[in-house]
Length: 167
Length: 181
Image (cartoon, rainbow over all chains, first blue to last red; front, side):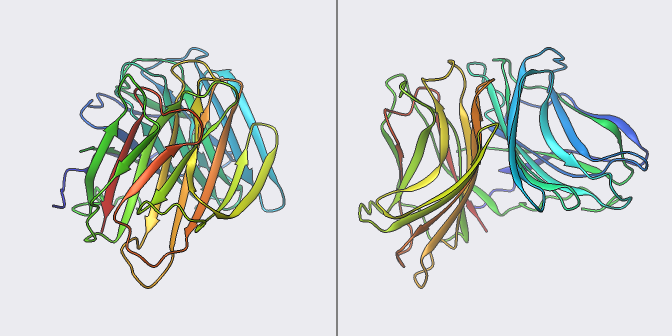
């Protein structure tokens, strides 16, 4: 019954130097959903912030997002429309050695009929706990994803991409 | 997962696809997963869906367990709509909520998404609790949400019926149920 191939690690990247961007390429179309799990920090001297998401190298204003967060004293919500990025994670840059824990679910990523929606739970203890939903207005199958941020991502940050199969 | 550790798969051999339903051209007002085996520890529902209701947005993705139509469900929710945050609850209602989805009020091709965990679903000594992260973005509107739900029954869950809160589930909506050990 249990299948070793239902929730499959596709690729894993562990940063051994401060890195401006991380790319997962040649993503196979054989899964139903993708899950990106990250433990992310910004390098020393950087600040906190999101780790942003682009698909298939698309740098156009074809993304948008909505979020809710609690920062320890207040809850808030915000939005970006016709942006050049979605949001995959939060990175903690407030203290060296602090890493945010994030899970980004990219649903039905290989269908060629609909736009793509991703939902993210981001948790940076020194920043906020957050939920994000991002939209990529493209009907193309996702074959690569690129992660970037306002600062270089810290040594020790990890990014693991999983594929989930459906019955 | 620490730097330098080898490839890690927390779900190796423990995450099983039970059933997937993709809605056809006629749409569907409800979807049922039946004959769910009791052999797993938890269930996870993953959905990518859109409703046909066009008057307002969003549309709820509601659920019932074991066809129970009684007022045995309770819900808490928290969401942000891009400017404000809202928290609320429903008690003694006839459905739970897996989440919200986009619908025909928004541009075509915009679908919502959600992941709902149903913990200890086969236990016959406790009520059942669900938790979800869900939402949709329609480039200028949308919601990011979290839901929790309670089904006040000690019965093991053997079926799940998903119901569009208004209208139908639209074509290309998909729902996948997994067993987790």
